[in-house]
Image (spheres, helix red, strand yellow):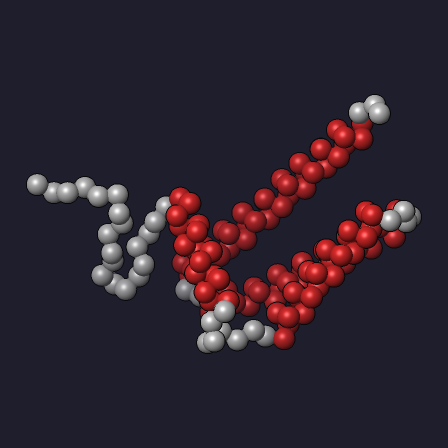
Length: 137
């Protein structure tokens, strides 16, 4: 009689078994954390620049909403953030040419999903802000 198991069967071709759902998410995060501290993975100078740009963008956006400044000045950190994100994406897209076609397609699908998550999250924040400020005090 054959046993049915919830565990994924190991593949014989050297690839890790597929696992679905949240366990796959946590395994991926663990794998990324291990790769980020690996001695064999070298960071480029542009990687450090983009990390610094992210911190700078976060601080400038916080200052733009915290201090009373003209609206035109408040748009500058937003434009800086858009530029930093474009710079980040352009520097990372070169990685795709080193991937297999299947891996490149998967990375592209994750990028598109991240884009839609950003668009929908922005709309949600906008709707919450409109609702909050349209309520009588």
